[in-house]
Length: 267
Ligand SMILES: [Zn+2]
Ligand SMILES: [Zn+2]
Image 1 (cartoon, helix red, strand yellow):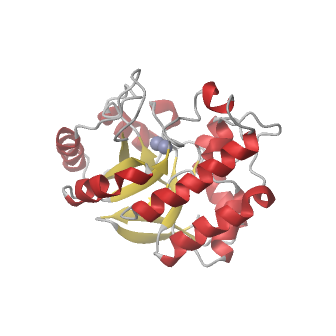
Image 2: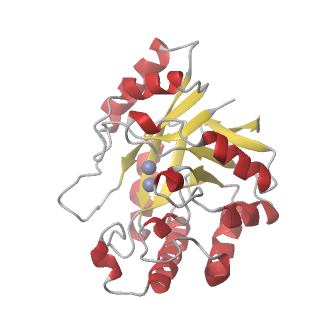
């Protein structure tokens, strides 16, 4: 079975893709289940893009697609929250107001700056920038833990001016271990985000070392998602991701319905 649990549509500020086109692309890819996880990043500090989410309109559209495509593909209503340490209460209240199937918590900002922009890296070394990203990730999950999985745990390596472009566990193991222990102790999962392949890293985010460590420490909940913002990436690299998961000692991946995990044997 193939599923994609990290998908963006035109309800996200950085995608123009109509939700129905995402569903059709999923069908074409042979996916049995998909979950929309459009962006909501409160207090996003840049003016060139807004990550506000018209959640009522979005929910209505996704529920309509769910009924239109019933029997062909399972369609989930999810969200990807851009976490920041000061947003705990706002997001607790927000999540309580909607019947989400699935909530991803992600770190997109480090002390109010997006490491996607080169200016972030002018103020710190690559290693210090990555460490600060992980420290903020810990602060974020301590402030708010009503998510199901933490998104793309090491994705900052997509933007760090590092050569080679990879996450060396030994350099950040103290922080990453603390993050993984925190998640496991609260029954939270992580995701395999195949956007890492698209970004040219040759592996998903997080990388196999992080996935293996999560498994070693007792973690069992791993969803799979492409992070597609355009139709051509829906369901992309899922075969590779399943292989990576098996290689890291997992026998199941996870779907969510109504915020409850469903375990699916890896193919
Ligand atoms: Zn994200
Ligand atoms: Zn995303």
